[in-house]
Length: 424
Image (cartoon, rainbow, N blue to C red; front, top):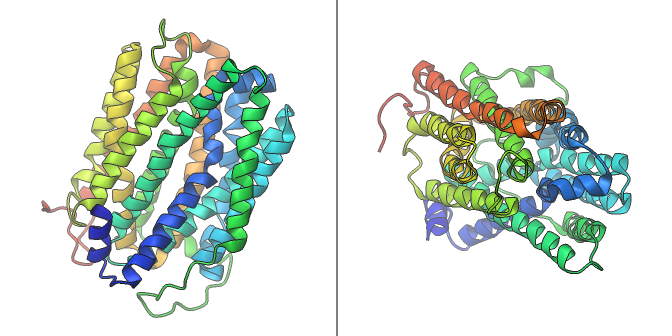
């Protein structure tokens, strides 16, 4: 079993091995629920009609949240050093729950929905940083593989949430008594209560530090943001990858349901579930591979090939080729982010928390810009030309692949890791 292989490779002995495995699975499952607001774009025109907003406001709804989230993530590295991963996870769960409960009470009031989505998203950034730091301390010898496992669990949840959204829409269409407002607010209330309870009950267990205890770090010390150049470059690439991925995911349901295509043979939620399945297969496979496998190629080829497939599918203006390019592209580019995370952890272990925080900050800024810009494009150019904006978004993955090639050719070996030499 790949998971058991990962844990054995990390040198964690039973029963400690199984205990750490349970912690990793539990925090990854909470991460799935913490990202529940990601289901909202799947509601597409139904959500727009319920809130009486246009494409520009739809883009604004999902761009303000990452922009504001960049501000809270800015402090996440300090909070991680000061409070530890477990307590930061707990605080983040409460923040996500508060946003979901506000969204539940907002009804048709678009500003209140905007605040609820923003508040929930604000807390997911620190949660992601705390979770990644927690996982790398659980398995200090296998950064890339355990991070890939956590991302694979998130992909499994990503399969379920879009299908749940399509199921809810189908039930609402079949039974008029089940209004859209109910299917929007009911699950938000349930997930919010679950996360609120988890925040009070989640304790985790202290994990023995693999290195001597670090000295106390003063909060807001600007020197913490000075990263080694190779790590800073990876931060920029991971931020661009995340922003491109999130922006495409946010607009894909609206795009597939638009007038760009004469026929719509598949529900957008099914396509997004297929994308999550591609992520799951890709990252689960990557988690099972040896830690040193493909250190060079995984930083270059996934972005170039995956981004190229997506852009090619979009510009054909064919629904089938667009979906195919998206699914095949996602299978490929999903492997580059955990590879970059593992490289960043190896190259800058003492600054890993800060690197994660800066990645979230930059990705929040980029995501806000990408999502908002496409919303303005559709509002002014019409949805018939939406395909061009989506193709431009896909070019972000091509840039990441090119940036990975520059990083590989310009980075010297460190910690007995040579990214320039062929690997097993």
